[in-house]
Image 1: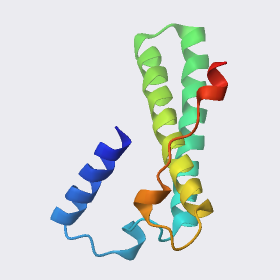
Image 2: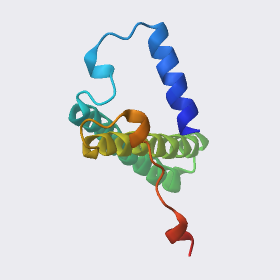
Image 3: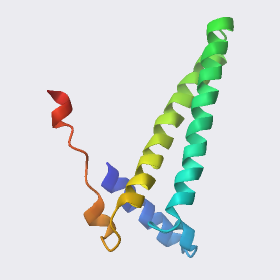
Length: 109
């Protein structure tokens, strides 16, 4: 799934003639991680607020908001993790060789 989304991103970027260096993988990673971390923090905060409001008022739209903010939280967490991994990646490694799935076999036991 990740490889498919990376291929799709590269294809779409090529169509738009991506020329801004900040949009390239490996460039300005601290900035991009910070932007996504801020979005993550806001999503968590807004999700908690809507959950508390739903517990108090039981309005349907608040429950929908909680679900949407939970999905956004997961989405942004993935982005933050990607940018942190990119920051930790040794310089000179290609993007394709650095994409390694985490070992989850130890967690299953």
